[in-house]
Image (cartoon, one colour):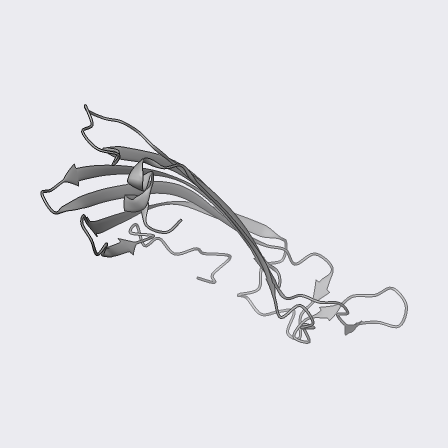
Length: 180
């Protein structure tokens, strides 16, 4: 999911599904819930991190192939994460190109994606309601970002795979009402 260079590697389709819940019994004591009877009380219920991600990659024959190794790949990934009152949704596409060397395969990949972050503050009262960095309404922002990757896979008796990827090359920060 993170290295676009391995998309469609070994001429195989690959699908990945990941779901997790972390700190499921965590109760957020930082914010207060505004109740109609009796004023603010502590927020009840679990607010642990929840993540769901799915990715799919497929080989693409870009030239006449002499082996089972494809000359390229294309993929799609989806990621959704909720941590407290911050929700992140990320959708990206991957492209890979492979160069067959005598003893190895070198893969180069790139991706482009759209990430959205949402702060949901409905029904919450802050300790300092006049803090200028606290947004007054729920808000969301999105950014386009890019990533690159490289992968080296040896051919032979001892398969060695080495890869490196970098995400969010655009480096654009998210800003929510004076908060980065």
